Image (cartoon, rainbow, N blue to C red):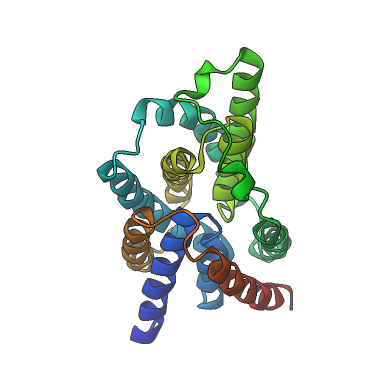
Length: 254
């Protein structure tokens, strides 16, 4: 790759890290971009995880510096997602690149619809916050864990848009406010990406130079995003993501 391509990767990583922490869907930019720059689809899928892991470390540190963190609860919630992520990653490894690109295009359209619909709107900001998800009854606890498992499977398979799914589980089912939800989301997404990364590493599906450059951008964006309000710049982000997704979907399908 040439210098300008590495600069694009870093910039895209920074934007994706910022977007991922504020809402989700940053991988809708970075994953197709890596494919567009010439990486095989499975390698791009694996390499993208490295950036997510680093981004999550910076984001978790940012939330902690603001006094918004509960590592014990985050670890408990990460359990079913980790199991699902390994399963999802193994599924992704076994799919031919051409088929994966078609599946990715369909997923991107679906996640774009989720971004535009945005089920977690301001009306959920006033939902009564609970200090611990496990103050809920057993039926709700089981529902949360089951949904997080399948969210982990999806995240292990493709990662793109997994943040939206985690927000929906914790904010709507768990009834946590959006600030606490986001602090748990970045932790769960990071653990999910870490364990799926191990699967891709085992199968030699990581382009390390590109991954570290992407990770540097992701980390910067994650740190900045964790220090901003959850809703700041949301409308602009949706517009940019919409244009990027449309362009990448056309590229993947043609």
